[in-house]
Amino acid sequence: MRLLSFITASSALFACSIAFPTSGTLASRQAASSIYKLPGSAWIENLVVRPNGQLLLARLDVPELWSYDPLTKSGAKLVDFTDALSLTGITEVSPDVYAVVTGNFSTRGFSVKAGSWAIWTVDLTGAVPKATQVKLVPESGFFIGVAPLDKSSILIADAAKAALYQMNLDTGAYSAVLTDASMKAPAQGSLVEGVHGLKYANGTAYFTNTFGGGFYKVPIAFDATTGKASAASATKPAEIAALTMAEDFILAPDGSGSYYVAQPNANAVTKITADGKSSKAATAASCSSVAFGRGANDKNVLYIATTNGAVFSTTIA
Image 1 (cartoon, rainbow, N blue to C red):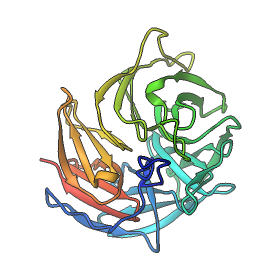
Image 2: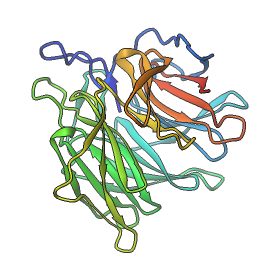
Image 3: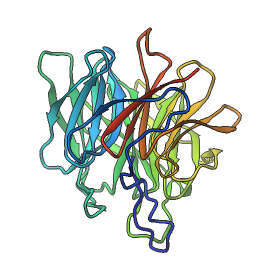
């Protein structure tokens, strides 16, 4: 989630998972171009692409969800959230229905409030967006990444507790699925942020660890009948690539087994192939999140959000 280029108690922490906004320009490798800029000193923590091709932009600096239409080149605020300072994760759980993470993170003081994190659903299938709080989680440390298990269940990454949780969106019931050292943040530093980006596909959870380093995968079994997720007690996450300061990422839609990972402090989106080899896919200042288009005309377009409130796009060959 955030690439905070934040203070490092020694020096490694001034490169946080939130990366201070830098110049806001994207020096392209593959015809990358600036397509939108939110007003003011905005910070986009995450983005997803809707079925209609519009982008949803989750802001970290204020608790607002925005949309941007690449066809009309216009943006607008969709939802204001209450009792929170910011948004972190967002994921689609069913067609045009989304799970959104809210909580109290200050982009001014770079501080996080434990116990402030909640899950909401946002339904965009009607004429007016409908936002509903599912559950405020008192034991939450720092909820960031979120991924669907099915239309009623999600996985949640807690960056402060080095844990994955599951939650039922219909009932609000939740429980811990896995806690592991690979998800931990370094002991030093005033901001505790470990596990960050999170995806789930074909029985496997994928995650980045921003301050702790690394990009991992781990089998997570999900029983759709009971709605329960579980990790085998003997199973440990396996490192896909030894990335540093990695945040959000996306699995390539072409079935190649590749991943595209935002590394804000490197000002780059890195491609990781199925065999773990890495290469630079695009240069993007303070990139925080990536997503591929979903239409026939933009299925090879990688959209890149940044902590400067800017959105870029580049075509991936």
